[in-house]
Length: 348
Length: 59
Image (tube, rainbow over all chains, first blue to last red):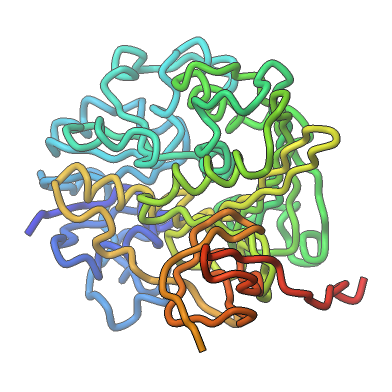
């Protein structure tokens, strides 16, 4: 058994990670930290774990060495003490944004501050198995992924590296997101009478996850001209991405079908959804709640050449903790899908 | 009645549809996209979209 600990386990992503790790056949959860909840049983913060564990939160300074350390801290707090975390475990998975971008300049552009450990950026492997699977197999340091970035990156995955798209015309993407993306701490704007029922454009431009999509497209040697908007809707979990891009001259729908099917056929967690029958004929985040699956579909207007890709994930799963566990499975040589087989609920 | 086992291309999503002991004019369903397909020929196997009532989702 591998002994894993979680630093910052009282948030939503930390709780989801704990749920997955407690049920994982290869993992013993050693410690879970929380400054706010230290001394309290974890199930008072994550009530779905009642009866699943007798763990209590401890303080970060009480951490003992372990085999694998998950960092689920607020953005900026992992990089500040990265040498300390590395002294506690030979392998680290950091769910925050601190080590997702390879460029310290890009980090400063999007996060508005200098990176405090730029020398470590190259040591981390971006933790989206669908893009970095081979690197993850030998990685000791892995970054997490942005939830909205993941929704868009998996949507683009079948077309990345192909000549079906006129990449010079850029990618325009809209994400509709649930309230759990905002984290476990409440604000005036998240107060129920304010948040409930709203359709709130909170990042028409400038969303930080744009950088992760640009980075992924750059790795595939295509133009990284990405324009993203984000809207908060009345949903707790989930992201729905709608992306617009343009096909090269002569591309037919058949070519797109082949590209999507060919690229996704061996992916354990990315499914193609474009159906003539059924209740949800394109990806729908609702039925992915709690699951690590990502659903991706498309439509094509041959007159204009516009390709519309639709993608859906659970932001806390494929967009955070699920991908982290999938990456962990690869790092330790286990079956990639271990502990991640839950297919979601219907109806929900 | 002649039947055939094999596969044909779905005209809707271009995936291969596996067929077992199907007859000409039989209606089958594509497992990928759900389209209802008519087996319009068994030698060679040919599939065409079967007439289907469109839904407007109440919009």
